[in-house]
Image 1 (cartoon, rainbow, N blue to C red):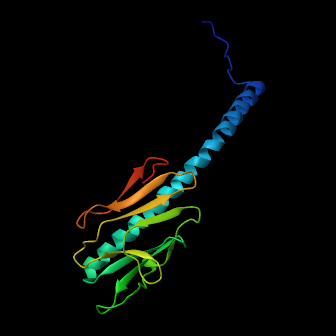
Image 2: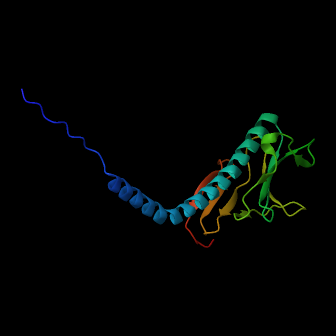
Length: 169
């Protein structure tokens, strides 16, 4: 019986260097577009944080049977959750999950609501029955990508929607 000589197939060093060079060039070309991805991700994260704060306040309002507010400070890029104490003033909630929430400085926050407090903060009040007045919070990144956290009726839950880039409203 005749044996076939084993053929060792492998890449040469030159081929490996060439493949690494191609990968490096491809990544270098793709890197600028990745920055846009991270900016859009930060915008989505900011909108998700706002939506989570609203959902948390709604759950607490229904559970505790008292009104809660989510207050927005457009100039400071923050939001916080407050609760009504003894049917009167709203005070910040001591719960760690409801602390002052800071959004990235380059994210623009706009609230479409006629309601604001003496300090110039706009807010949404969530009643003990879980209903809240309709409101739109616009979150815009430096490239003009806009997301809205919105509710169009008092019984509708808040959600996030994408707005056309650069669309004037």
